[in-house]
Length: 120
Image (tube, rainbow, N blue to C red; front, side, top):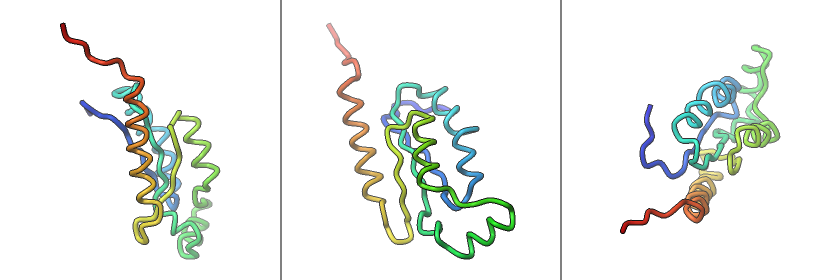
């Protein structure tokens, strides 16, 4: 994979799928840090509306799993040095604007500290 001209990376996982949470640590974060070590990263937990779904809780319980908590998301964000952890739910648009606002903020903040290109 190659990520040329990348200004912000948003790594997402489903709070209703612990395997996707683990994939952040084992696959996506290593990939991002290898190819874009200087690019700010946002960590986003999606499908937060399913955290309280009885169907999801029962299905995960049958596999001895639980939904990913907000505390776990925050801890993972710290572990991977993400600039922020956010949660959203596309089905009801909860938190969607905040994700994009935070991505724009991370981009602008990162631009302040980038070395400018100087041509003579």
